[in-house]
Length: 327
Image (cartoon, rainbow, N blue to C red; front, top):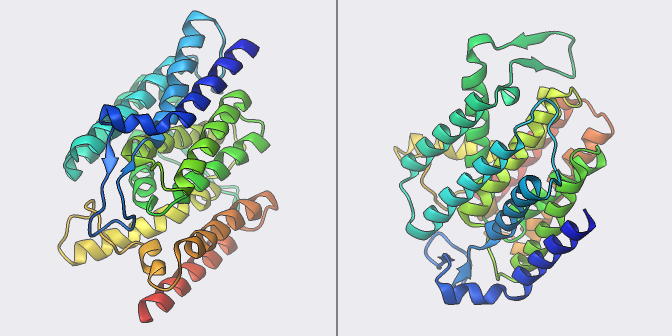
């Protein structure tokens, strides 16, 4: 374990310090356009930090018999690593050649359906709520419901990634939340280390997550939170609250795009962070959105009523949205 940890830390640090050389091998780059707020070409290399970790985790599990991850009801961690790598590759190809939005959604659904069919322990069959003793049995709709939830979160997470530190800080809070609940400690701590290295690069606009980073992070977070739910340490409404920040903005964008007869999966500059940027600087926008995210997690730890949290967050969201649209 000690040697494995040192090797993994070394690999991450090598990627961090020699990051600029990725441009010399034609690694995918985000170029400025009408929808982007950065001024120069930026490497979409965030996903590579996590991809390196996953490859190493897979290697040491199968060749060194060091298992850094364990799910509550599954012995097929290899499948989890393989599917996560598939998501990285899908995102990498999209970063490289800009895949059609409908094709991406279809591929995401196919990959998730295959994974859940091969590992049914991650299929959500019962919905439990913190505010009632009643449960909702999904029955034959459980697989469809789980695939839909994961696919929507993947798209919401990707759409949420619009300014520096935004999605990275959200992921960091999520992994810290899991650490505090003693969930997959070793795996999560290494991912936090990689996230911090990426966030440093992202802060200086040297690296973006890209679709490869968004897809791999959203898949890992989604599967981890389902597994956390299966051991009955969290309720359905609480999961909704933890994931509602990117989800609410995605819902609004989907509705407005459909009304405008646009493809709901094709990007624009109507995201909340874009609207806030019209009134505040990028650092101020990040601080506002980070404070909202952090408040939700803190409220969860203090067992604040989830319905109350929901209406407070929706009210804050509408306040900033309406105030800045009217300016």
